[in-house]
Image (cartoon, rainbow, N blue to C red; front, side, top):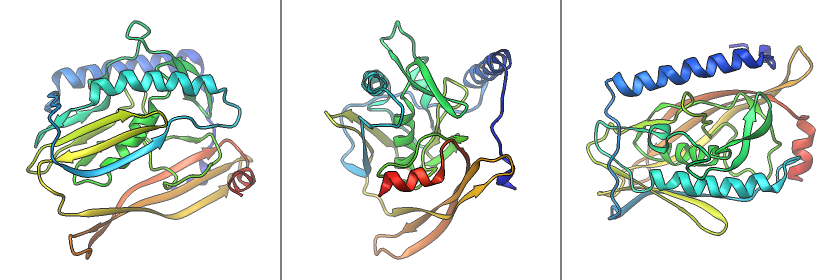
Length: 274
């Protein structure tokens, strides 16, 4: 793919509305009549072994973004994780992010938060839940679970600030047509633990048996390329190294390729990280 040919797309509000309605209805049909068996059981007796644990900072100072977005996001995360915490994915079952959380509404207590929208951001009910889908995706890459649906961000909206994970290692979400789905193709169940501390969103994948493997996620072929229309396109490939208990490399596998239109000057990113 010639990723330098990517450029911002302008769509009318009516086209966006019709498209969302179509794909939302299509997702409902898939949930109702599809052949997938979805995870639904919750259990609060925690499995004894932590397969992978990760946490992300709740309050981030983003360029041009008022902090009330961040504070409302925390409330939205608090509501959403109650629907996911304790979920057990049995062998053969699929975890669907949106099927479990449901539609964010004011009636459920969700607040306006930041929603990315075609290269910029706006307020929207339940905004900020991408932090949760990003966390789940990153954790799952460190397990033998299989990611069957993940949607990438088409735009790189904010400059990196103290980034600790590779660019493009998250998963965007929008109810319900941009979902995160994870299938358990292993022989044992996995359990999800989620919590909020004063400063972090914390998550764990837990299992009945200790993990036989460890995982290293890394990027390669990272490029920032000028595009013909005057902007920049960011590209990388995410790979995963799998090690056995003796820390011997078992496999080095391709995970995903990312392309995103940058909505800021590349030099700004370097200034922020200096």
